[in-house]
Image (cartoon, rainbow, N blue to C red; front, side, top):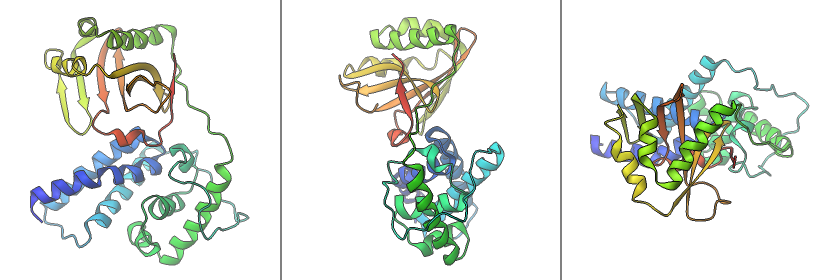
Length: 285
């Protein structure tokens, strides 16, 4: 496989890897960060001459380990243990693709891995065992128990996460979105910090207010997009809708970071629409 072929394969499998990382970390945004880390590791390993027989399985194993590393660093304590009293199920009777990312986080790691790989990504139990580095029997048991737990958790409403914001912080975000809606990009430029950082996720990174002017120009050229103030996974966000219907799922979103009254960071998820596949989002206006 040439370097160009390898890069093309990474682009093609990226949404699939994100589905795994997002459910393992319990967050669409964190899942994208973990995915980027996993892809960097994959590129580095290939450059160092690591031999790969099954590229998809190899990438999933790297994504799996990157997800576990992230969870250990974060040391989250809200993963609930599974009791022995839960009844195993031979087949899933809940739409696991539609289950919210935070719900997956309530499964123990191996069960989460097994359910995502088997019922979301379509891998066999043997492939699950190879990626998770466990026995097929352990993978099958984890799959059955994970399915049973998800069946129970799916019955419990998972309310939208709302951001904790002061009134001044809310007004800043509302002003940012209002300026976008009105095409008042000069007003937005006046809000930028001199060292503002822009990340078009999976496309480019720029730093400095004088470097990111074309970012706003692109939005000005696409009048069919509509903007709303909202939240994604409890984080204040600008939601971007493709068309007039603001009741549908957003096409993408942008996260804005502030330093006092200046915009310090913009993370725009335009080029990774899969991040919103099952992410928790809500309009706040």
